[in-house]
Length: 201
Image (cartoon, rainbow, N blue to C red):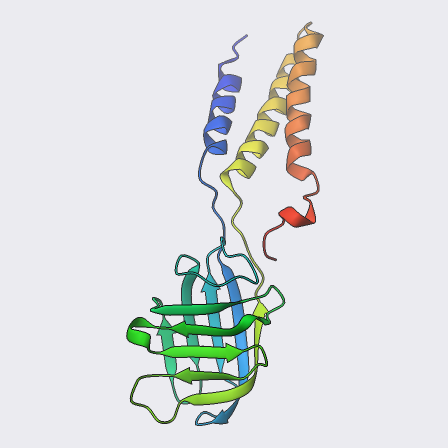
């Protein structure tokens, strides 16, 4: 009886457990109501890394991009010269004012905690987009399963398969150990996760 396949499955699982976790970014959809220059309902998408902590100041390391669109202009900010304020998990503005400035200060997007906002496209314009009712909404986070999750699945299947294979022999203690590995792996994979450990939804 060879245990090589089982040992290889354990080695693969251990390697995957040590791999870097693959997570999704935090994405906020934004809409507002135009009062000056633009018309209708502009929209934007704010993307932050999964390391961002809701309610804190957005740092350069947290920021990925802000894409703004209205009936008269579209702006894409992918690097910043200044970031102040942050966003709470419910989409409200944290710390008074959110200010995101692109390279050399423009384009510049800002919103207050009273939902007043503006988009200043450049330093020479006299007609920025201005409005009210600015609202961020946390988009559904479709996170990619982490390598550790796949490792637990494979380890569970390997343990159950090995237990099934050994069931034909007269060594019940080994069968019990292999079954335990399979069931424990499956139990760890399907156990409820505490709410404070959940990522953004």
